[in-house]
Amino acid sequence: DTEVTQTPKHLVMGMTNKKSLKCEQHMGHRAMYWYKQKAKKPPELMFVYSYEKLSINESVPSRFSPECPNSSLLNLHLHALQPEDSALYLCASSQEPGPQHFGDGTRLSIL
Amino acid sequence: GQNIDQPTEMTATEGAIVQINCTYQTSGFNGLFWYQQHAGEAPTFLSYNVLDGLEEKGRFSSFLSRSKGYSYLLLKELQMKDSASYLCAVSTTSGTYKYIFGTGTRLKVLA
Image 1: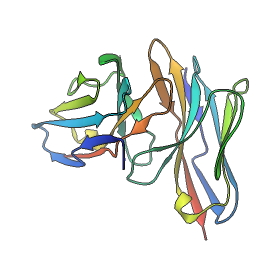
Image 2: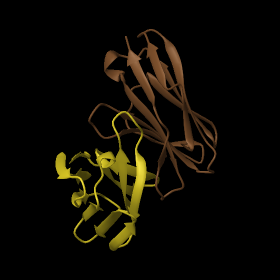
Image 3: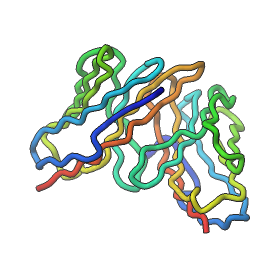
Protein backbone atom coordinates (compact mmCIF):
# COMPACT_ATOMS: atom_id res chain seq x y z
CA ASP A 1 0.00 0.00 0.00
CA THR A 2 1.28 3.41 -0.94
CA GLU A 3 1.36 6.13 1.72
CA VAL A 4 0.76 8.83 -0.90
CA THR A 5 -2.62 8.53 -2.59
CA GLN A 6 -3.33 9.97 -6.01
CA THR A 7 -6.66 10.21 -7.80
CA PRO A 8 -7.75 9.49 -10.41
CA LYS A 9 -5.47 6.67 -11.59
CA HIS A 10 -6.37 7.30 -15.22
CA LEU A 11 -7.76 10.40 -16.92
CA VAL A 12 -8.70 11.02 -20.52
CA MET A 13 -9.62 14.57 -21.42
CA GLY A 14 -10.09 16.81 -24.41
CA MET A 15 -8.01 19.88 -25.05
CA THR A 16 -10.79 22.21 -23.94
CA ASN A 17 -11.64 20.41 -20.69
CA LYS A 18 -10.83 21.45 -17.14
CA LYS A 19 -9.88 18.72 -14.70
CA SER A 20 -7.93 18.32 -11.46
CA LEU A 21 -5.47 15.76 -10.15
CA LYS A 22 -5.45 15.14 -6.41
CA CYS A 23 -2.77 13.95 -4.02
CA GLU A 24 -2.99 13.19 -0.30
CA GLN A 25 -0.43 12.15 2.30
CA HIS A 26 -0.76 11.63 6.05
CA MET A 27 2.89 11.14 6.97
CA GLY A 28 3.27 14.69 8.29
CA HIS A 29 5.67 15.58 5.49
CA ARG A 30 6.06 19.31 4.93
CA ALA A 31 7.23 19.17 1.33
CA MET A 32 5.13 18.00 -1.60
CA TYR A 33 6.01 17.71 -5.28
CA TRP A 34 4.48 17.29 -8.71
CA TYR A 35 6.44 15.46 -11.41
CA LYS A 36 5.71 14.66 -15.04
CA GLN A 37 7.11 11.46 -16.48
CA LYS A 38 7.18 10.36 -20.10
CA ALA A 39 7.81 6.74 -21.09
CA LYS A 40 11.41 5.58 -20.57
CA LYS A 41 12.39 8.97 -19.12
CA PRO A 42 13.10 10.01 -15.52
CA PRO A 43 10.56 12.07 -13.56
CA GLU A 44 10.72 15.75 -14.45
CA LEU A 45 10.09 18.18 -11.60
CA MET A 46 7.20 20.60 -12.09
CA PHE A 47 6.40 22.18 -8.71
CA VAL A 48 7.55 22.05 -5.09
CA TYR A 49 5.49 23.12 -2.09
CA SER A 50 7.21 23.63 1.23
CA TYR A 51 5.09 24.32 4.31
CA GLU A 52 2.07 24.85 2.02
CA LYS A 53 3.80 27.57 0.01
CA LEU A 54 4.91 27.25 -3.60
CA SER A 55 8.69 27.35 -3.48
CA ILE A 56 9.70 26.03 -6.91
CA ASN A 57 7.99 26.34 -10.30
CA GLU A 58 10.18 24.82 -12.98
CA SER A 59 8.90 27.17 -15.71
CA VAL A 60 5.77 25.08 -16.14
CA PRO A 61 3.16 26.41 -18.64
CA SER A 62 0.24 28.22 -17.02
CA ARG A 63 -2.20 25.59 -18.25
CA PHE A 64 -0.96 23.63 -15.19
CA SER A 65 -1.97 25.30 -11.93
CA PRO A 66 -0.94 23.81 -8.58
CA GLU A 67 -2.74 24.29 -5.30
CA CYS A 68 -1.96 23.23 -1.74
CA PRO A 69 -5.14 23.59 0.37
CA ASN A 70 -3.44 22.21 3.50
CA SER A 71 -0.37 20.30 4.60
CA SER A 72 -1.84 16.94 3.54
CA LEU A 73 -3.33 17.82 0.16
CA LEU A 74 -1.92 18.85 -3.18
CA ASN A 75 -3.91 19.50 -6.33
CA LEU A 76 -2.94 20.07 -9.93
CA HIS A 77 -5.54 21.92 -11.98
CA LEU A 78 -5.47 21.29 -15.71
CA HIS A 79 -6.93 23.50 -18.42
CA ALA A 80 -6.52 23.62 -22.20
CA LEU A 81 -3.85 20.93 -22.27
CA GLN A 82 -2.01 19.85 -25.40
CA PRO A 83 -1.46 16.31 -26.70
CA GLU A 84 2.21 16.50 -25.65
CA ASP A 85 1.02 16.84 -22.05
CA SER A 86 -0.02 13.19 -22.09
CA ALA A 87 2.17 11.50 -19.46
CA LEU A 88 2.26 9.92 -16.01
CA TYR A 89 1.88 12.61 -13.33
CA LEU A 90 3.48 11.70 -10.05
CA CYS A 91 2.99 13.29 -6.66
CA ALA A 92 5.60 12.86 -3.93
CA SER A 93 6.16 14.02 -0.37
CA SER A 94 9.19 14.15 1.88
CA GLN A 95 10.46 15.27 5.21
CA GLU A 96 13.29 17.39 3.87
CA PRO A 97 16.00 16.34 3.21
CA GLY A 98 14.97 12.69 3.45
CA PRO A 99 13.74 10.33 0.74
CA GLN A 100 10.66 11.10 -1.31
CA HIS A 101 7.59 8.89 -1.15
CA PHE A 102 5.71 8.66 -4.42
CA GLY A 103 2.07 8.04 -5.18
CA ASP A 104 1.07 5.56 -7.88
CA GLY A 105 0.52 8.40 -10.32
CA THR A 106 -2.22 9.53 -12.68
CA ARG A 107 -1.91 8.39 -16.26
CA LEU A 108 -3.19 11.32 -18.33
CA SER A 109 -4.18 11.12 -21.98
CA ILE A 110 -5.09 14.24 -23.97
CA LEU A 111 -7.28 13.70 -27.01
CA GLY B 1 24.96 23.41 -14.33
CA GLN B 2 23.41 20.34 -12.77
CA ASN B 3 24.17 16.97 -14.33
CA ILE B 4 23.57 13.40 -13.21
CA ASP B 5 24.72 10.53 -15.45
CA GLN B 6 23.89 6.83 -15.40
CA PRO B 7 24.30 4.08 -18.00
CA THR B 8 21.15 3.74 -20.09
CA GLU B 9 20.82 -0.04 -20.04
CA MET B 10 22.44 -3.02 -18.34
CA THR B 11 21.88 -6.75 -18.60
CA ALA B 12 22.76 -9.37 -15.99
CA THR B 13 22.01 -12.99 -15.18
CA GLU B 14 19.79 -14.30 -12.40
CA GLY B 15 21.84 -14.96 -9.26
CA ALA B 16 24.65 -12.62 -10.30
CA ILE B 17 25.81 -9.28 -8.86
CA VAL B 18 25.40 -6.02 -10.78
CA GLN B 19 26.76 -2.53 -10.07
CA ILE B 20 24.94 0.55 -11.42
CA ASN B 21 27.06 3.70 -11.41
CA CYS B 22 25.96 7.30 -11.03
CA THR B 23 28.11 10.41 -11.42
CA TYR B 24 26.87 13.86 -10.54
CA GLN B 25 27.77 17.53 -10.71
CA THR B 26 25.39 19.70 -8.74
CA SER B 27 25.44 23.03 -6.95
CA GLY B 28 24.89 22.03 -3.35
CA PHE B 29 24.53 18.48 -2.07
CA ASN B 30 22.34 17.15 0.73
CA GLY B 31 22.16 13.49 -0.12
CA LEU B 32 21.95 10.89 -2.87
CA PHE B 33 19.02 8.54 -3.30
CA TRP B 34 18.38 5.39 -5.28
CA TYR B 35 14.89 4.43 -6.47
CA GLN B 36 13.54 1.41 -8.29
CA GLN B 37 10.78 1.85 -10.84
CA HIS B 38 8.96 -0.97 -12.59
CA ALA B 39 7.32 -0.12 -15.91
CA GLY B 40 4.06 1.75 -15.41
CA GLU B 41 4.54 2.05 -11.64
CA ALA B 42 5.76 4.74 -9.24
CA PRO B 43 9.38 4.92 -8.07
CA THR B 44 10.05 3.21 -4.74
CA PHE B 45 12.83 4.26 -2.40
CA LEU B 46 15.78 1.86 -2.08
CA SER B 47 18.71 3.58 -0.42
CA TYR B 48 20.07 6.92 0.81
CA ASN B 49 23.65 8.19 1.32
CA VAL B 50 24.62 11.47 2.95
CA LEU B 51 28.16 10.64 4.08
CA ASP B 52 30.91 8.83 2.22
CA GLY B 53 30.87 5.09 2.44
CA LEU B 54 28.70 2.05 1.99
CA GLU B 55 25.11 1.60 3.14
CA GLU B 56 23.80 -1.96 3.13
CA LYS B 57 20.14 -3.00 3.09
CA GLY B 58 19.66 -6.69 2.43
CA ARG B 59 20.47 -7.52 -1.20
CA PHE B 60 20.96 -3.82 -2.00
CA SER B 61 23.95 -1.65 -1.10
CA SER B 62 24.80 1.89 -2.09
CA PHE B 63 28.14 3.65 -2.01
CA LEU B 64 28.95 7.36 -2.07
CA SER B 65 32.12 9.39 -2.65
CA ARG B 66 31.29 13.08 -2.36
CA SER B 67 34.78 14.22 -3.40
CA LYS B 68 34.46 12.26 -6.66
CA GLY B 69 30.77 13.02 -7.26
CA TYR B 70 30.21 9.29 -7.58
CA SER B 71 27.80 6.68 -6.29
CA TYR B 72 26.90 3.13 -7.15
CA LEU B 73 24.05 0.76 -6.37
CA LEU B 74 25.03 -2.87 -5.89
CA LEU B 75 22.42 -5.57 -6.33
CA LYS B 76 23.32 -9.06 -5.15
CA GLU B 77 21.69 -12.43 -5.86
CA LEU B 78 19.74 -10.97 -8.74
CA GLN B 79 16.17 -12.11 -9.22
CA MET B 80 13.92 -11.78 -12.24
CA LYS B 81 11.77 -9.29 -10.34
CA ASP B 82 14.78 -6.94 -10.15
CA SER B 83 14.25 -6.13 -13.84
CA ALA B 84 13.31 -2.46 -13.60
CA SER B 85 14.65 1.05 -14.02
CA TYR B 86 16.98 2.33 -11.32
CA LEU B 87 17.01 6.06 -10.71
CA CYS B 88 19.76 8.01 -9.01
CA ALA B 89 18.62 11.33 -7.51
CA VAL B 90 20.53 14.10 -5.74
CA SER B 91 19.01 16.41 -3.17
CA THR B 92 20.25 19.98 -3.49
CA THR B 93 19.38 23.19 -1.66
CA SER B 94 18.89 26.62 -3.09
CA GLY B 95 16.52 27.88 -0.42
CA THR B 96 14.29 24.87 -0.90
CA TYR B 97 15.26 21.21 -1.11
CA LYS B 98 15.11 19.99 -4.68
CA TYR B 99 15.63 16.49 -5.99
CA ILE B 100 17.31 16.11 -9.37
CA PHE B 101 16.95 12.76 -11.10
CA GLY B 102 19.47 11.06 -13.32
CA THR B 103 18.47 9.59 -16.65
CA GLY B 104 17.82 6.16 -15.11
CA THR B 105 19.29 2.74 -15.87
CA ARG B 106 17.07 -0.01 -17.30
CA LEU B 107 18.22 -3.35 -15.90
CA LYS B 108 17.25 -6.61 -17.56
CA VAL B 109 17.76 -9.79 -15.57
CA LEU B 110 17.99 -12.90 -17.71
CA ALA B 111 17.32 -16.48 -16.60
